[in-house]
Image 1 (cartoon, rainbow, N blue to C red):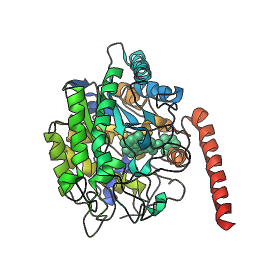
Image 2: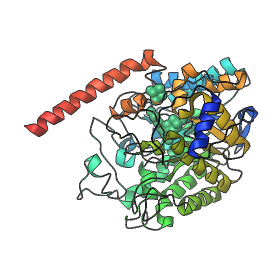
Image 3: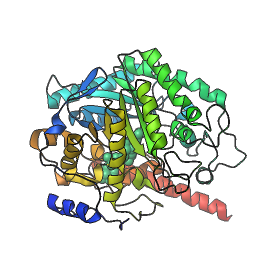
Image 4: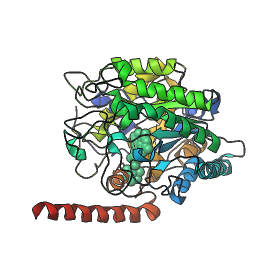
Length: 463
Ligand SMILES: Cc1cc2nc3c(=O)[nH]c(=O)nc-3n(C[C@H](O)[C@H](O)[C@H](O)COP(=O)(O)O)c2cc1C
Ligand code: SF4
C-alpha cells in the first residue's frame, strides 16, 4: 500500500502517470461514447449509462414522506440527466429507520412519493427533452444495528453480537439479538413497501444488503444460531425470502435490484467476503455464490458496495481527501481504494452476465470520471457508472458529459466528507461545499448541536 494523497491533478496525463506509478488497475479512454449508450434493466431501458447512487439526506417529513429538501434533491438529480436514479434508503418498518427523518413509504403517504417522483420526471423532461424518461428505483431498508427511529440515541436491532461494533453502539453482551420470529415477519413489509413504490410510479425497488445494516449484517451472521445464521443458506435466507415476497406482490414487470456488500473489511466470524485469517484479504467465494443465488432468483439489477461507513475504514466504500471527525486517514492511496472497488464490480459483472451492475467509488476522480467510466463500460467491467457524492455536489455532471464531453473541475466534489459529517452529527445532509447556500448552514447547525451533546456527555462523565 502507498501513502494517502489528496487529489492534485490538473491534466489527464498526470493522473494516468500516478496510476502507472502505483501499479493499480484503473483504465482511461478518450472515447466517451459508451456513456451515452442505453442499458437494458429487466423490461426497462435506461437511456444512458450514468446512475445516481442512493444518497440519503436524513431529511424526510416525520411520516417518512419526501420533504421539500428531498423533492429538491430528486428534481436536481433528474434534471442532471442520468439514465438511472437510485433513490436513497427508505425504511420498510418504523423501528428500522436509521434516523427519525429517514424516508419510509407507507400506504398513507404513497401519494406524496408519487408527487415527488412526478416532479422529478418533469424536471428531467425540461432539461433533457420531452421524451426523456429515467429509470427510478427506490432503495428499501431496515437499519438493524444502526436503527435510530427517534431521539438522538440509537435503538439497535442486531443480528449477532460483534466485539468490535457492539461497544461503539453502546450494546452490551446481555442485550438480546433479534428473534427469528421478527426476521420472518419482514419479507411481508418489503413486499408492502414495494407495492406502494409501484403505485407511486417507481420502476422497481432495491432490497438493500450493504453497509452493515440489518440484511448486510445477516450475510455475515456466522455466530447466529437458528435459521438465519451459520450456514450460507441461512445467512441469505431473509434476502431470498424478501425477493420472493416482493416478486409475488409486485409482479414480473417490476425491477428488483440488490445493492449488497461484497467485502465488509471486518474480521471473521463477523465479516462477509473476508478471509478467515486476514480480514483485509478478500475472499470471493461467498460473494460469488450470492450473485449466483440472486441471478437464480431473477434479480434485474445489482450494485456492489463494500465496507462499513460507521466504522474506521470508510475508504473501502468511499475514497476521500479528508475524513470525517474521529476517522483516521487511511494508510492507502485513494487510487488503490478505487481500484479495489472497481475490481469487485468487474468480478460481479462477469458473474452476473446480462444482469447489469452499477459500479461505484468514482467521485474522488473528479473531472476525470468520464474517461475512467467510459473505459470500464467499454471493457464490460460494469453496465453503469454510479455517482454518489458527485451527484449531490454536481448533479448536472451527466448532462455536461453527454452534451459537452466534459465535467467542470470547479463543480466537482472535493471529497471533504462534510456531507458524511452532517450525517454523523444527526443533521440533514447534502453538499456543504458546492450547494453551500442550502447546506452550509445545516452543516454548521448540526456541528453545533453535536458539540453541545458531546460537551454535555463529557460533563456527565466527569461528575
Ligand atoms: C451522505 C451520504 C449518504 C449516503 N446514502 C446512501 C444510501 O442511502 N444508500 C446507499 O446504499 N448508499 C449510500 N451512500 C453511499 C453512496 O451511495 C456511495 O456508495 C458512496 O458515496 C461511494 O460513491 P462515490 O465515491 O461516488 O461517493 C451514501 C453516502 C454518503 C456520503
Ligand atoms: S460535502 Fe460536497 S464536496 Fe464535500 S464530500 Fe460531500 S458532496 Fe463532496
